[in-house]
Length: 420
Ligand SMILES: *Cc1c(COP(=O)(O)O)cnc(C)c1O
Ligand SMILES: [Zn+2]
Image (cartoon, protein in one colour):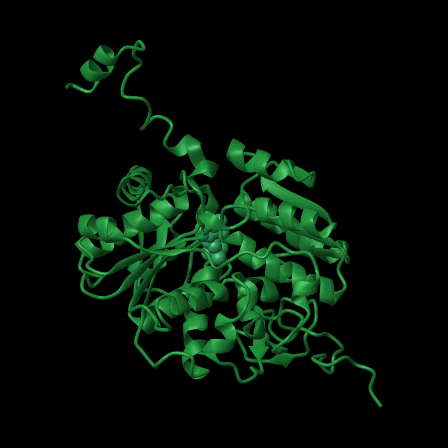
């Protein structure tokens, strides 16, 4: 007789449809556990699933959050019984005015600024927290370029967990304050993100009850990004857009959106289709676009120097998988200068009323470049991912925008200032 609850796997964990961990490099399968590296080859582990039958109607009846897709994510069947951030189901907006400027006829913007801490990182952290709870951890931790720090500190606060957040000491002021306010153990580390990430990996081995969301529970965390692919497709009326443009830091998000599209097809939730995935980087941190341009599989680490700090990972863990994905689907990875990033932020704001952080500027500016260079088809349905809120990176545009004039409180002065 077994005493396991329904939904519990043979290992004793209820992680919904997650069946095992599988090595992305050598395919070796291992039981669900708080592991992230293959015991055979040290390659990255990812979740292998045994999906239940599921219908569009069932999903549509679900909550307006990522939990509507819980049967497709590595989270307990009882995930909604515990306090969490319930992110997702953010708006997908038609972007006709931006489309007209870029020369793209059918354009949409996926606006993830609407998440609880104003970036897409709430999705991955919510899944990591749910899995970490089931795996027996008691502390939530992360190394972060900023948005992950916000999301981790907030989710831990809501769950009543202690948290430890490590950031590079040069981070934007808004991102520091938007993390510290949740009363987390925030430590500014002397060094860049890649130094902070190395430190976190070391600590993950020493502190057994700390779930570093993007290190030792990374296989679970990373799957949270699939919710973006599911949502985009559902919001388009259950179809996959021909072209999706995605900002790249570690590269995880890009590969998981492609994975989500593939799952929707194999589960019969959408018709089979061709899609192209495009990656967007900043020139000041462009290890993946450089490898793409040079036609190699080897992603050579760089020392980041860009205003797009949320994308400033010089040694991206999923870089080779990004190259695989864009090459397999017929997409590309490109990069743009910091001035183009600022122009991208302002273009999106002025045409669609969406204020994005620098990563959003990176996406918009790369989309413009991809059309100009003929790599993006202007007649195919296109979705741009806006992954974070402009309030987080005000410093990026503070010298570009401001009042037209300071005037005395008279109507005459207003007319004069406006040239009327
Ligand atoms: C982290 C982040 C990304 C990129 O995520 P990866 O999965 O690491 O590539 C994109 N946009 C924003 C705003 C982010 O914070
Ligand atoms: Zn392996």
